[in-house]
Image: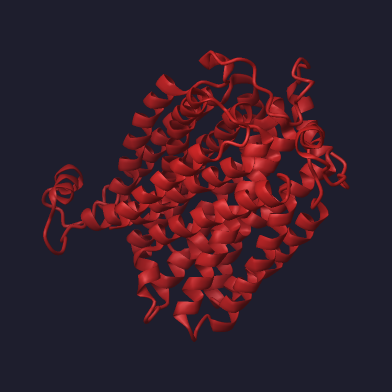
Length: 492
């Protein structure tokens, strides 16, 4: 049933993509652009599966990985992910998004194989050691290659989507993230269940295949390493499809020159060095404010997605077991709603300004986190629903900031660098919450929502500061084609 729902959502998203054509593109352009972003996006979704399978393995490994161990492993990995963008963002701006996504898929695949080997050796007793050090090192390598993914998809998007279309593409970007979370949590949990030494109930063909491939004959141990091997294999398949289908620009696909009216319009002839690209972010008050909003969204997003799954495992959620059992599917469905809500509101009601819907969503997250704090130990249903609604809002914020605003103001030439630095701040926020909550939840789970609330307020404050911001080329386009636009109050 869950797979059917996700399939229906995918069909709806594809339908909305073809329906949303404000610039009147020809049918072949729309089709070729779909052929471009679909494999790119599905690769990114499975990169998420190869990233958050760590959370699934944490629950499966039990005492072999404590909350504190998990906090350090995930925190170190996300810190590496964040700092990698200083190198990988400018690099993808030079080599293009197609090469970047292939590097991401192959590198992450190999790292997941290594995590699977390590898990196998420890679980079968062939290697006596604590997982935290070795897992931290290999997971950090995985996250380094993962960092190529987001900047690559946004780099390609920048050439194929006009600024006035990017809000809806941001929604598609959020949808792909949501699919990845579904693959990680629900598919990952299903893989772990199928790989148990003593499986329950009737074994279907997939169940029997996983048992045949991964189970250890003569040893009654759960084959948890399968949760790393299977995403690794899937990523290699998508890497081949990316190499075959993706084109970095419309011109490479034999279309005439297309100007998306972003910050690079009129200056595409100027060559930017790596230092020029980095200065474009770190000397821009606007980009720094977008990055800070990204940091707060990283705290909120992973503070909910990761820790609710662990909370519901440790603290019995009587009457709300549905949330834990279908966490991946629910994150997927609610995330899609959030991504489209933010993108459509931005494009349709605020002339593609990203600040207004972001401010609204941040305020909503604060209210939901407050409800979680109030009802944490008295109403499992309210806690589960509030967690999902925070996810709805934060996917909208992440899509608008990392997936859209950074590309708008960075422009095509600096898209990977700008979106990469913003996404880096997202994962610095992720690392901050991972280590912090790893310790704080050891004292009391009440610290969990209380820790999140200030970050929702900080994100909302800076979203208000960029309420009127638009790239100059976009303002000019709207003035000439659609009518007067509000004056930008924020320096670019």
